[in-house]
Length: 512
Image 1 (tube, rainbow, N blue to C red):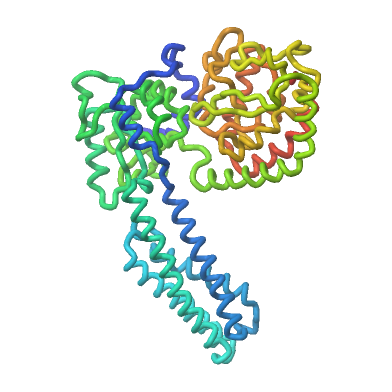
Image 2 (cartoon, rainbow, N blue to C red; image 1 turned 90 degrees about the vertical axis):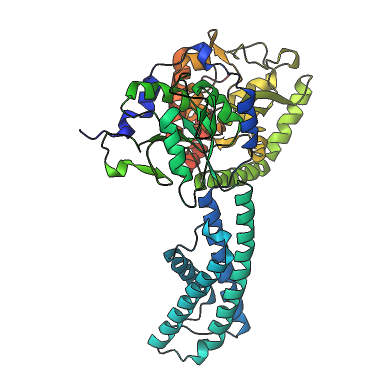
């Protein structure tokens, strides 16, 4: 049978074009009390093992680099290969230690729960670094007496301090493992025998970090019993969308065969809006895929369909970038913030800041701050009526700050609070409508905008899609641009959008 590439078969476009759920199906479902109880159990945020491993590596690098400089200073300096550069050589030693430790899989988060094996790896890796430096001294004909004191002190301090740091890290990892913070949480989509076999396979694996949170299946017959391998069926696929918003899960494992393409596409149309990794189980699949197509959840072969956007280090870097730029922007724009607040207060009665609930990450409601631009007694919390050209509800100051987007500046504080990002899809009001139709009824893929944190500005805004939404095409263009951003995110793209935003704001006709 010819190999099928699921990356094409199950692309975002294919999912968007699958049979869309009706308006009744897209409304929020009421999940069972059991599902809510299970969701509450998994409501705590987990720590990505990749980030934990990276932070441990970084701590080794910083610790050994500093110890190298201290040792150099205490021993009155030294020369290595004709160089007297303590910072360069200390950094080189720290990097070599990390490489030697990586070569023996010394940064496995699971193994770090036990301190004893780590001590052996630390001594072995640090000994190799010291021997390598001594070898360089010998080959460069540097007298050993020039480096003996420095290397000796660095060797002793390196082992002692790194071991103490690792002891603390091991304690934290054991605590997090016991608390379920280092597990990967999975939901099985599809019940019956295939689900039971997947659960048995995962639980039989040594050092398994996959935690099954429950089973969801649309079928309600003998093929899908209420209990599978000891796990309850918590609801159907529609219930899963609501369940995922109440708890912190990492992935969905779909047991439906890839060969049932139509059924899979219909299901993925409902699920792809979730900010999760979605895998199709391949352990029973008779179709022959190329080896590079497969991914593995533990030892379970799967076909990856969707990956969580802006995950792990990407999410951390984006958050650090947001905090840094938002803090700097608040300082730089403080005269404008203060001046605008005074102007609003003098221009009309009412509060300076307008607060409004909007849809944020994972379709959760968040409170957004803006400078008030409408008369207070005509404020529209539900945005049922879009602001139009020459709208009588807009104040004199409001016309200026809306046209220049100064009214959005208080959202920099939302960024610091974590409810917004600097760049992302613009957040819309809950149940917002255009021409008496909900946004999600107008544009396919609309709910997928919530797979990432919303932003103050975005890819759609710098391409002219901002302001009033008075026809379906404007909304569809926004959604298409937002999905492009989600699927192509990078820090460089965020930086480009931020730089382009000021130049685009004064050249658009849609903002009133």
